[in-house]
Amino acid sequence: MASFARKTSNGGVALSIASEDDSEKLSADLALFLSNPDLKAALADGSLDLTSYSSTINAELSTLERECIALHRQAAPDTAILREELDAADDILAGLQEMLLGFQADLSGLSGDIRQLQDQSRSLAVQVDNRREAEEGLRLFLERIVIPPNMAECICRGEVDEIFLECVKDLEEKFAYVQMTEHDLDDPACNDPGFTASAGIPPAYTVAGREMVEHLLKLRLQAVDRTRAYFLGVIKQLRKPKTHVRMLQSHALLKYEYLVDFLLVAAPRIHAEVRDVYVESMSKTLYTLFRTYHKQLLLLDLRLATRVDLICVEEAALRDAFSNKVNLSKKKGDPFTIGDRSK
Image 1 (tube, helix red, strand yellow):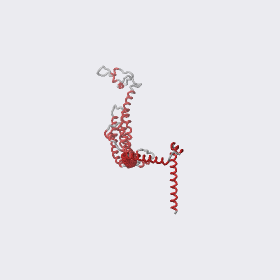
Image 2 (cartoon, rainbow, N blue to C red):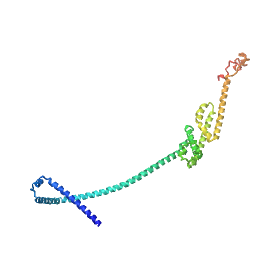
Image 3 (cartoon, rainbow, N blue to C red):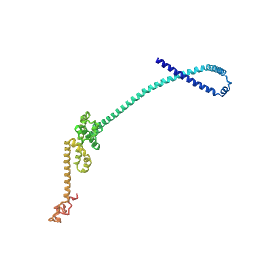
Image 4 (cartoon, one colour):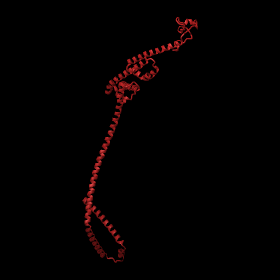
């Protein structure tokens, strides 16, 4: 009963709404009908017959309906063609929609691929940076321990000059570096940047460091032998007469004073040998120089006569027994004689 009442009430509401719409439509039609001045005047004077007017209107509507049907029949082929074109356009648009949906799906997949490529690119960038840092550290480490061929060639076969001196300095730096241990690493005074290159590992504990120690020792001994031969050759030149000792010391010994320190560290016995030979040679050279200088001073301070000697000597005492010539060599103690000072 309650549902029937609800249905009834709903039906009544619908009928009331429909009647209101019809009344509004009727009012609008009447207002449109009265807007025509001829019809309004005919209604006012009573000359308008509504029945005949209605028949006339119906006849006109029937005529118009027939004409509209005829026109519709005439336009039926065009309408069919237009319908076909609309269907074809609809199919094309459907195909375009499917294509666009496929593009959208592809773009979604491409965006995922692009994000994946971006992630891979960032990962590869990090790997490249890490490899560059590792490569830089490895390069610095190898530069500190590896012996270049030109350095080995210069130490073994080159002349002892400024290049040889620089090569020996580099050799000593490499040898000191490969011998660093944990004690050197813990030493606050040791701030060698080479530990950073070896990742904080003492070079003496690395395989490359242990391998290079033997090669560095061999090259070091070769440098010691070349240095010993050079200094002994220079010292041998000091013993030669009429040698410019000062020039030789300045250009051949003092110029390579680092090699002396190198011998003191690398081969103390060789250093002591070279020092003893140099001291002996210089002592002999200085002794010879001072002896010559002393002789020259004695020539300048030669005593030819004293207060008891005669200034003049009789010519008879200077004559030879077998000739009348005067022999001046027999004139001893003559203060006017030049003697050996003219030499």
